[in-house]
Image 1 (cartoon, rainbow, N blue to C red):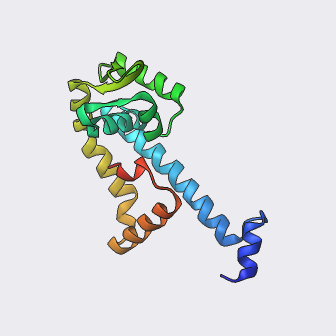
Image 2: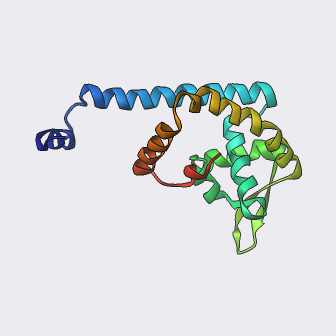
Length: 162
C-alpha cells in the first residue's frame, strides 16, 4: 500500500471499492449466518442463538457460573439485554441467578442441569450449521489466515467460542 493510499484511508475519505466490498461482505455474511443459525437452533431445539451462546459460556465457566456483567461482555449484550435474556432462561429452567459470594450486591448466572442437557443436545446442531454454512467454504490454510486477520481486529471472549 502506498503512503498516499494510507493517508487517504486514514483521513476519513470514502471507502474504496475493495474496502467497501470487504466491509459489506463481512456484514452480509455475519447477518445472514447468524439469522440462519438462529432459525436452525430455534426450529430443532427451541433455543435461539443468543440463548445458546449464554449456555455455551456458562457451560465452559468454572462451576458453570459467571457474573452477569462478565456474561454480558462475553455474549456482546448490554447489561439490560442480558438481564431480559436471563429472565427468559430462568423461566425455562435453563439457568438460575444467585448472589455473588464475593460481592453480595452482584449476581451470577448459573447453568442448571437442565441447561447443560439442553446445551449438549443443541451443540451438535449448531456446530454442524457453522461448519456447513461457513467453515466448509474455506481450506484449512484459509481458516488459519482468516483467524489471524480477525485476531488482529479484535481479541476477546469470542475467540474462545465453539
